[in-house]
Length: 402
Ligand SMILES: *Cc1c(COP(=O)(O)O)cnc(C)c1O
Image (cartoon, rainbow, N blue to C red):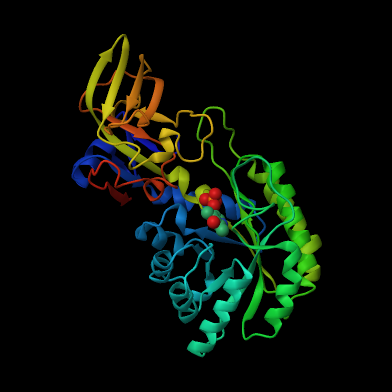
């Protein structure tokens, strides 16, 4: 939270104090992302992870075109999950062969676009593999694919589990050898494997364990691959702290584990493989704030409410309704009084006519009133993109990158 600058007692994004930024944007609420923080986050990963490990940005975490453009100069590849995300990625300088397209339910129309673009399709089922082959023949092109594997293990401690047991994601590990045999008879270029076991994990040891098992499984499956394996996407799931109970991830431990895995396991056996971790939240989540303005201050039976002009329709996650089991407050501050001492306990609510629109429950803040700016931190990932913007029919917020 302290990564953002303070200027004259105000929170600043990209060197611009928030009150001035609100004028520049034309009003509140809005999202502001700081490119310096994005750049620094990539640098931290480059410094900590092995140098022959590549970094992919999972665009769904924040698909704002300017953010994706900025990331294109920093990371090695993009992972997209829809045709529009693919177009956004291809509008940057990132080459098509460094874009991968994952996700269940890809339509034939999306597969055609992906094959025509020359991106790598991370295939999610046997049926999808057959449809990609048909699209390839129709277009006279050789589709580039990687097999997304639903592993035979699952990762504990993830905010969202996306591997192990029955899943809509990927091909069950035990069925992959048979699929690879079938793929050998088709005109698909099989580059390698993709395993994504879960999201928002703050336990380095669990992530290390998942990576060890992922590499072990991939090396086992590589024996059945129709051509030399050139691509191993180990997933990611690196979490960020959202509440005062969350401890930041021990990135150094993950770096050490990956260095060992690459040196001792992957390089001796698959020297040509491009090894990738794909991260969304960890890259962009902490580089964004959601800025709102206090519209009303009221006391109801002894409880003080600050009512702001934003809400869960823009920043669902902060209301606790996006993947949280027990609601906990996201970090919150009065941005134009950032240097003032906490003075009172208030409850910050949004402008939607539902009790779900709770942004800060009994939080201690400097005394604030109508016109003050309240910010929610950790809004750079799964903020606007994961929120029900049509709910209550308020206008969409502006997003700016500074
Ligand atoms: C969503 C997603 C990611 C990014 O997850 P984060 O938790 O944001 O890092 C990576 N890979 C795949 C396949 C995804 O679906």
